[in-house]
Length: 475
Image (cartoon, rainbow, N blue to C red; front, side, top):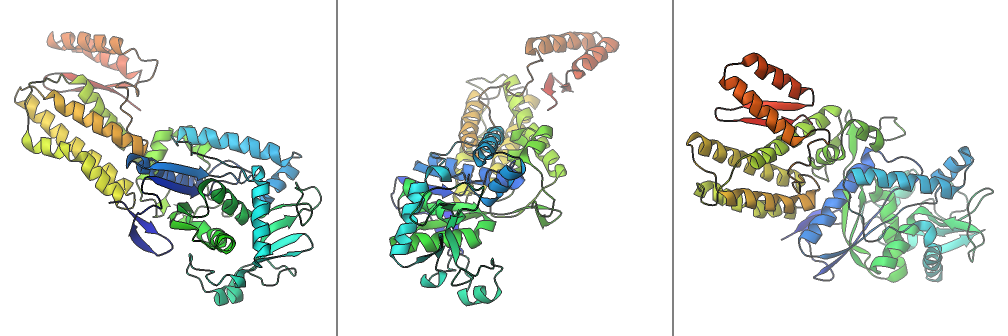
């Protein structure tokens, strides 16, 4: 039974979608005016595993993740670089895809852009004006927060306290300082579209309501995003959507935690942020993805390069074990072990139990490594007693890990030697190891050391055991 923490109720709830076999999920995407940072990567990975796991559970998932491609930040960047907004947004959407590919992020079902849904946005603003939830002043349209009696229900904030103490933009046009823009009258040099209120462009909050309802309907299952979006963005989405439709908007609200540097929230304003492209110059995408998975999606992550190094070493241990499996000869009539077999057969069940508990990826990863420890003990015991390992155990483990990999996006065992660089000839390495074994047998240790050093130049590390030599590539 899948259980999810719902920000709206602040409780873990059993997941019951509107349609028993179909799930609608909307996640707020990036504003495309700059390169993605680690916080964007954290959110992308968090909702990617949620998307993948829902599909693993047998749901038909319609996953929508938008691009905000018209915004003050985009306009400012375009003006500073003497370009138009489309050039800026196209550039950073392309960069976004480069980063996401390296992080092994699956593409959502739909990736709408705000500028492609202007008519939908205008239509939604009209509905709100017609229902007296919005008002037009000189080409600017504002949402009237006081008209929506449940305002603050997601963030659990009191509207009177917000009025007296909220950090809101000072604007004499507004009837209430909490009212927010649905449609903005365009200033000189800004992009604009024709509307019933004159030339203008959409506000930030309205675009997500319009696009989510366009693809998922007026009520859907999951709405997600970063923790920083709970208030104001998601609170405002609820207010305008439910005011327009009279129906509940999203049933489950899921938010990922912040990325912290030295225990402070990472942000551009503090200057303590790292872009994905810079980190990915030093570490491969799987290492970064694995690092992000090691913390539960709702908890803050303390980012550090030491943490990335530890993640890299953990992945090395996993792939070293896979290499051991590939180098070990298994037999159909090999030695079986009832205790180990029971643990091996429980791997998928334990993995799903962890993921059913609010997508607990760190615990799920722990189950994989617990099984590897037991498998190593089994192989050590079999070798020690000069027996044959049972072939079915290898097949079962690899099959189950591939299922887990399809959800977590790490631990790819689809090719036994995928992690060996192209410049290394596997047959040459094995031939050298055989030559070294002969040299050692003949006590020609100088030649044996020479071969070891020759292999080390290519990153090949040798590990001698009593009966054979294992090899691996330093990653």
